[in-house]
Image: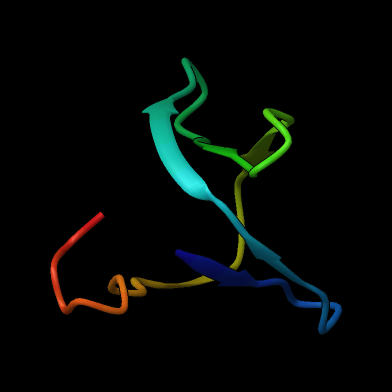
Length: 52
């Protein structure tokens, strides 16, 4: 999925869980996790059209 933040930056990662504070926990290709509390989340499908 792709997240667009209020400051204009973006992050492409996989949602792995919800944090206790309600943040969406994303993990990027390098294994780094980021908690997201605010941003526009866009679900991105794989190239074969299936959900990741």
